[in-house]
Amino acid sequence: MTGTEQTDERPPDAEALAFLTRPGLTRLWTAARTRLERNGLRPAGTIRLEHLDAQAREALSLLLARPITGLTATIRLPDLDTRLRASAVGRSLASTLEELGPPLTDRRAVRDAAAAERARLRSTVQTAVEATSLSAQPWTAQWLEEIRRGGTLARQDPDAATTVIAQAVHTLATLFPGTEARPTPASWGRGELATRATGSAHGLDDGTLLSRLVLRGIALARGVAFPVDAPARRALWRMVSVTPDEVSSTVLAYGLRPVGGTWREAALRERADHQMETHLTLRELRTLSLKMPPGTRVHVCENPRVVEAAADVGRTAPLICTSGSATTVVLTLLDTLASAGCTFAYHGDFDWPGIALANRIMHRYGAESWRMRAADYEYLATRTQVVGTPQIALTGPPAEAVWDAELAPTMDALGIALHEEAALDLLLEDLG
Image (cartoon, rainbow, N blue to C red):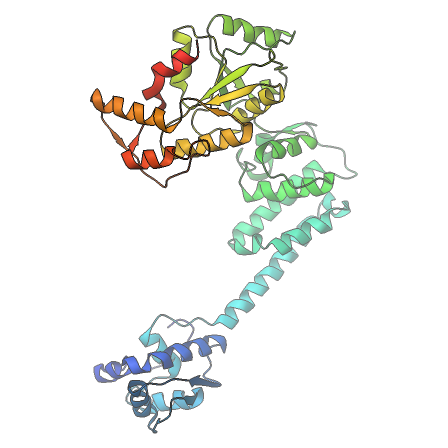
């Protein structure tokens, strides 16, 4: 029996149990449960029941062996406990409540245990810091205070919290060795640093608790704001000579003809002249000069098939593919082109995730819609029905299109999802 003493109390017989579960006693048991859980499961204090109806007064009178005639009753929990033990129920108040409902929770004990765990964790953190070079760093005290105030560690499993704080301290001590010689290599790959701290190359990936703790320490050490997006996180890592993975993710580009004079820009122009697509990494984008001819209009699509088809038929317009939801490397390229004065036209899937992505691109870059209006959707939907194309049902939560108030209602009315390939011939016309 959770939270109560083990006794030889007998279970109530069927008749007693039927009486205890009468509707007229429901409020009594609810109030008694609340009070016991606050009192460390001890039957102490009183409860007050108001606005009693006839059914409740009758049930309480029978249970307490005294008449309850008014609309209000005050009940001493020690008396109720004694009455239950001496009656046909034959059980304490705590045991009765557990018989009637879920196990009781000693909320006072839970609070005390949580406070003790927070104190233990603070002590563990402090001990870990004092054993490293971080104890000499002027920002460490603020880092520890922010961890305490944030409460994130306290909500973790105790063993997991102890592990992650030890890893965070180890990682920051590696990056800020104080008076010690800086360990080699002087520059770290983030995966290499993560392996050193956690045994896993992904231990410092974005979104992990460990990466957030370490980045908060780096931000305090460098006196900058905590990063709120992926580019800012990468920039912060580079401040301490840690290189995030900048080669595994790529953005698909086609027809880019930058005017820069290095071999990199020349290579892009040559690939564009030969109708060849290019996969650009973040590492390349950091070294490229993507100054474009004045007034360059860049088309942006969602699906790689559009790029493939444009290359197959020798289209020449610049084209960038988001490959579904635009990742950091995609946004980095578009940001660079926007800074170079390019304008954008966007087309994606006619489904709700596609509309949500289009909203983000159009809002961020002031892009125009590219065959993405209600009339375009209605024409394509009708065409697929006429030629007998199997229909895909439109599912998920609707999204309003910021560029055309009529698009979402039209899509909702027809209920058909259209992938970008349904408009491929029209898109290729525009890319000539």
